[in-house]
Amino acid sequence: MSSHIHDHRILILDFGSQYTQLIARRVREAGVYCELRNPDMSEAEIREFAPKGIILSGGPDSTIGEAAPAAPHCVFEMNVPVLGICYGMQTMATQLGGQVESSTHREFGYAKIRARGHSAFLKDIEDHTTPEGFGMLDVWMSHGDRVSQLPHGFKVIASTDSAPIAGMADEERQFYGVQFHPEVTHTTQGQRMISRFITEICGCETLWTSANIIEDSIETIRQQVGTDEVLLGLSGGVDSSVVAALLHRAIGDQLICVFVNNGLLRENEGDQVMAMFAKHMGIRVIRVDAEDRFLSALAGENDPETKRKIIGREFVEVFDEEASKLTNVQWLAQGTIYPDVIESAASKTGKAM
Amino acid sequence: MIKTHHNVGGLPEHMKLKLIEPLRELFKDEVRKLGVELGLPSDMVYRHPFPGPGLGVRILGEVKKEYADLLRKADNIFIEELRAHDLYDKTSQAFAVFLPVKSVGVMGDGRRYDYVVALRAVETIDFMTARWAHLPYEFLDLVSRRIINEVSGISRVVYDISGKPPATIEWE
Image 1 (cartoon, rainbow over the protein chains, first blue to last red):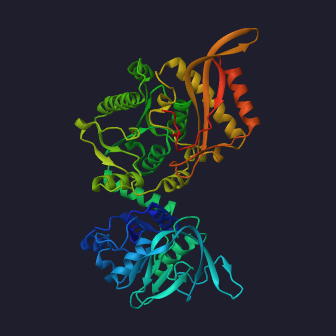
Image 2 (cartoon, one colour):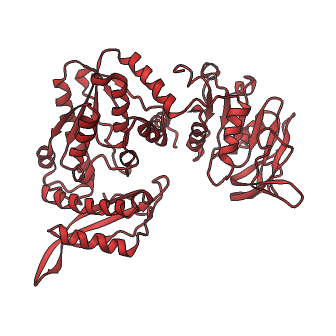
Image 3 (cartoon, rainbow over the protein chains, first blue to last red):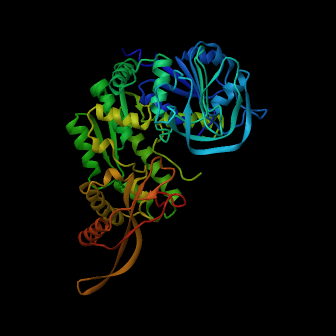
């Protein structure tokens, strides 16, 4: 089990849309692991990632411009399904021989689209039926450009008045493109479409569940730290609390937490943290009451930014002092979450998110 | 830069600790689900965000123990009543802010100059934009009366009706 929850995975190439993280969350909600990466990822990296399917996100650029970012060409040669959303659809169209034009009919907001041709992507998914019996979908649009000519092998799977090609598919190669945004909740059936793509079209099993993630993490943590001791700064916030609970389940008493009362906590917060983690869960927690130290460091300071820096600095010093007393500790645990990882990767490449 | 974040903290460098980050693949909603699955109480897992510098940025200007103690009491009454009235989960973030100014109040027969607290409650999906929570007047009235009656040193309670943007959620 544990080595497999990452095996069924989707690669999302991020062209910079404000909605890209939502795509990833929808895929995870549907029970499948995915990662967000830059479109400049190399072919070798993509092949090593071995996705069961690839999603090309939306983005602010126009494929008509010369420097328009494109998907690495191998994306279309790996025999895996590809879903292009908004800009992702446009770059798919351009790269496979179709055409994109700037439309005078810009669309922002709700739109009704008509599903056509019973594609594997949209078949039997509808919000309304017209008197003529056509399936209609309420979707969220946000685009200026639109696909004006299908690439060879593609057919239309959805249309609106202002975007005759609002969706396209080459069902043989399992390439799908939609001009609307299935990842936003305004697209009522969006979650079903994403689930349909990753489970039925890409064939992913829905292994990404809390229970499986915990089981997998526990095994990974045990392999990683062995019999070493791990130190964690417990703040009472959600992330460090979940890290504490997870590490405790994985390695029991090899986990040592340090909780710093800086005198700036909410009423009874310190006692509650101790009651919950030390008493109730049986975790080793060292409580440091450092109220006086923080307050004297802050005395006379009025500037908000300086106050933040002082509090941050004092915390590091107090934590450092405690950590230095624990001679067997070899690991420091942190509650970093995926959006922090994405943000720091983006700041390294200088890309605004 | 809007403001510095420090909650990650720094590494004790001389210790040469190796880093372990078991949640680095997870989104916040996944972290919460994991917490519940691991047996943490949902009150804790679904609590509102709390800034790294804590009450340090909810006391405007200089931080003093006296201010922190008053603020803790007022904030606790606000949160307690939000929970009691089933409003906590309907707001995304709620807290009290300490204003180090004194305004006049009449308590019993005497005029007293005491401090002011502001209550802040917002509704938001992503914390990038937020609207102030339209809490019922009766509820605000109850919280205000409890704070003024029970927290000696505070004689005036105001409610923050600024949206983000342009105002931020926190006051500092």
